[in-house]
Image 1: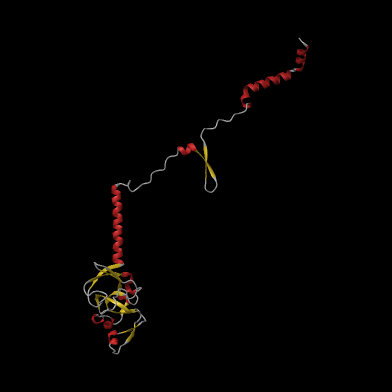
Image 2 (image 1 turned 180 degrees about the vertical axis):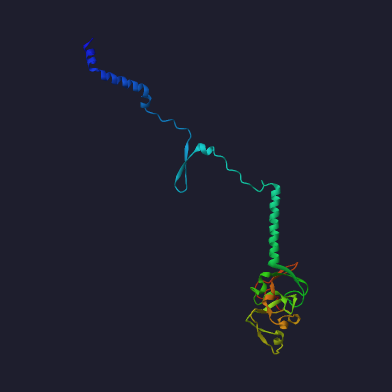
Length: 246
């Protein structure tokens, strides 16, 4: 035995030998835990960043965007079954007819008049006029308007006349007498009444005969005369539609 071997044996004590054996045993059993861990390889998908309008951004994967399902198709009129389209069209048609009937029956009335009392504004023969019922009971009626009303001395008779005076106005009872230089009389139209006459005074029975007309008897305002050749509108102001005098 050499001097180096004896020196090594002297330096190696029993406690040191036991420590070396324990280290070897721990290394064999738990050596894998002591090795440095490697990061797993990243996926090959490329991430893209979608920038929002307000400046923030969200990360979205290109693979997920490619696999997103397409948006569902919106229903269209051509894809609707024929029976359903026919039903919808019928419902719309019924609503249009009902609305038209409501307008015609409650707002506008087509009526016929005959007589020489409104010459030359309306012909003496049968003429067709459109009456707006929104002016019933005298609402919104002004001097110069054409109105339809019940005759106060005979409620079964409907008449078409022109408004000459409204409540508080002073009117000449007989303008024809004033034109002949005869003595005339003026009256003040009472509240809730109007004064009406025909445009053809010699052939008209109006307020000169039965006095002021209660506004409650006014049925509507005449807004147009209808004929197969043309329409004459009376909505341009007082006395609109009156032919100029010859």
